[in-house]
Image 1 (cartoon, each protein chain N blue to C red):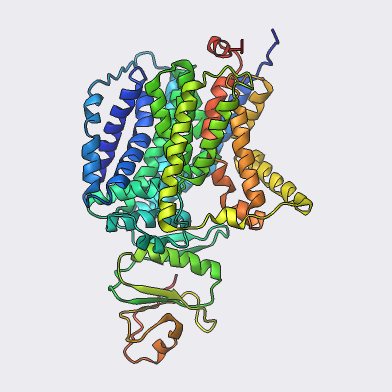
Image 2: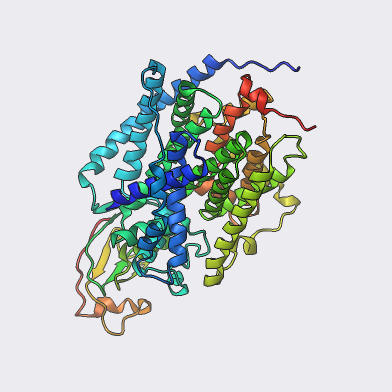
Length: 147
Length: 432
């Protein structure tokens, strides 16, 4: 019968568990305690979330607000197309099933951290003519919020 | 209400598993209970959607007889002969569970895939009560043809509670992690005694690559649990070939297909492996597992095609795949390089793949399972190769997650590949 190679089991176990416990001490537990500190008090109805864009590692903090049904949200500022898509999906999820409309405008003149929230949809509005919002006296800029 | 729903799923699941494998240990029953029960509830929910608005209630009612079987489960506790090593292993497992609980349950969901692919679909179904083409328009950018197990699990909780609950969705992921650990422990118990099995389970949770992977609320942890469950049941069938166990295997294979597209690929590969096992002189008692796998994968593909047909969505990957030529050889080398770096770079705290590699050297593989895992890794390689994206970007977004799909099952395989042991020699049968 062919002789099987013997494995240095104790050495493997020492390296394996040593590396694992070192990770727990160096990163695992410090991260866990930080998360507890940041989020444990917000148990249940969390009001904000940091959404990470896939691949880039960049984050945007989305603040959950009670939005009146039938509002418009415009995320203004210069933004890459890819990020626009991510934000749209996020708002799709957050705002469903309210009749809130949203879109993102890429306007280098506006600071990217501004979120424009309009309380209701003006007559004849479409996202193709969003510039009209600035001319319309009925529209109120409800909030500027840092992302 | 969420807690009650979780207990309900766990108990009905334990009843289902007890029906299929009455002689199994408590850890085996509890490990398989939640994944099986949650998936079956979601499936029945899907079937009843068009008929009743209160489908979550009806699906629970239909499966309620399984509660009766839980009465027959007799847990045996023997804590007198526990050693300090058992305690240390349990401590490490508890430390890992605390970390996963914090990141999965306490933290808000931040992963884009989890939000747009799974939670959003679950929320829409929970609120609308059904799944129609009109709703699918909302999913236009998030792969409407994708398998529906996870959104339907979310929707089941939502329909039962009367409102969609993100906390329930997070709880599902944590329950799957607990199930995964119990399945790993149960796999080890097929060969080893309690202490070694606990150490083995602890050895999995101290792999940072695997633990951090469990923090993700995407579908990958759920898929890896179902793949590990399928491999565990296939191993159990080699030891105790019973038709009822094969039925449970068919269910887990079906749920694997119905969770992610990679699950369909794995299940098809699993069928191919069972067919070729005899040619590999593996001595696999393949009839029951093969029938179960074929039944599961057929039902899984059928369930995949129904919503796909309903929404008329394109098979985007097939339609847009690139045609290979010799100029793409550097691409293949690049993909291979990134994969190997991800798998074997110790500085990324990833030592998960070293042990299986080391055990290949010992030439112990009674069921030739290594070919199955090689096949799945090759599948990922070719997916990146043919995908119409720059491979660096594509692999950066998904490689660390997809590598986890087979990791727990591969880890369970190491129990059987470990040299020595009477059971291992007994299992290594030869073709007459």
